[in-house]
Image 1 (spheres, rainbow, N blue to C red):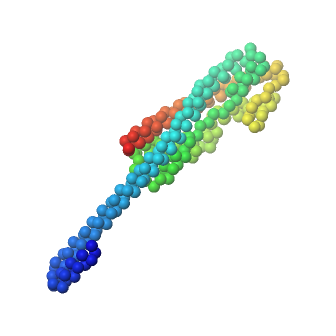
Image 2: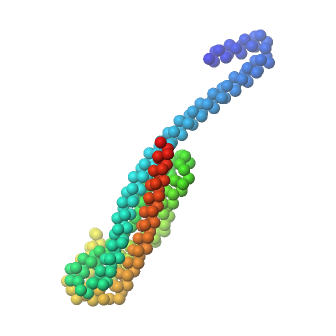
Image 3: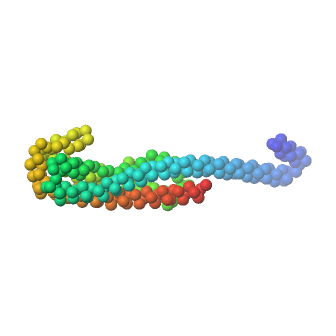
Length: 247
């Protein structure tokens, strides 16, 4: 093909048709430019398909992470709802319980809840060079969720302690002060041989205040879990819609 064009140019020059030669040369340049543009367009089109497929696979990983978060949040919400009953049981029935029953009841309110979203898939997404291919609603909602609940959450270190952690530490310090041995490995509570001391503790206004504060904090935390679950469900719907419409 190149030899063919070259032969045409040489014939035009040899025949002294300079004007036609320049017109032909310009036309040839235009054809070359058009060819380059078409090649670039095809290359970009293929590259966009590759990017789109990569992002779809990443979004499927995000889906898996979100479904795991949903299971964890459902469990956390269920426990947080039961926590109120655990505290009320100690406060209302502690004086009539046996020492063993009371100790078991106290163990139930001596636990920490915290939630951190699994963000492996999301981190892959934000590091992808063409996230602009994704819809604005998808990226906005995912960014909001992981900004608030991901491992790199912008929430301050103080808040990251979690309300249940704060309450448990207060209860733990009180129990140690009152003579309860605390197991370091699991922060479990061992029993007291002195059942009379246990009964006195149940009626201590400081102990009652700590439990009431723990119940309040857990209710606040429950509201956060419910908001997080709603956001997870919304993101799952958005991703599912995006993947369905992208096929």
